[in-house]
Length: 273
Image (cartoon, rainbow, N blue to C red):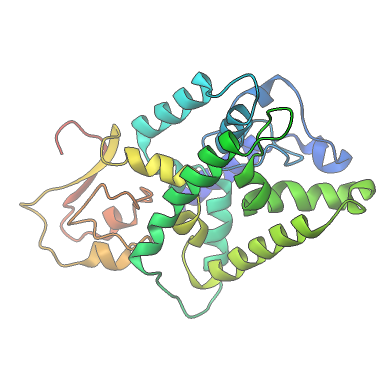
């Protein structure tokens, strides 16, 4: 309940421009220059900050700049500080997927290899294509946001279409494609825990790289651990915590810590792992 409260509070906090949901206009104040840690669409009518993935692509696709020290530093800071804790506690789209997973249904696990797809998405759609696929003005497309991101469709595209009649006439094949991806993710989320986070999210891929070295991490006391496997059974990210406490897939939700009968799993700013 503590984690859910923080997830809800953070979602409301970073989407606190409630006037936008009434006017159908995006907030463009000074706060929009600041990135938020999780995946939250810039174009959401209530968004007060910017998505780090969208910001990264905007700079990579610019004819003036090819790298943003601010965005890069921002991602390194949060990654080095807490790794995928951001995914488990601070990402609004992760919360939406978790709520959908609570719907009663047959639950399915994805093959392990599918977790590597997000790294391909990061490399190709977030980095390479915005750099290489440019128009006559030297501007690159934000390809992940434009062609894949279901969070942008849900948080930005749909609300803006509902609130602005003029935008509805501009809806075409691209939006149909984006809606199809969103519907697929919604359906999958009922049967699979956080499918977008596991398979497609480039932000999760970035934070995952820092999981083994972040300041906030997990450790397992080998003297207390009985290898009963209860932590693995309760983990919805399909991680064997007692074998690899800082797996790239761990979102630091803490359920394994609560489930451990011998209290062998520790979490926090740990010096000795």
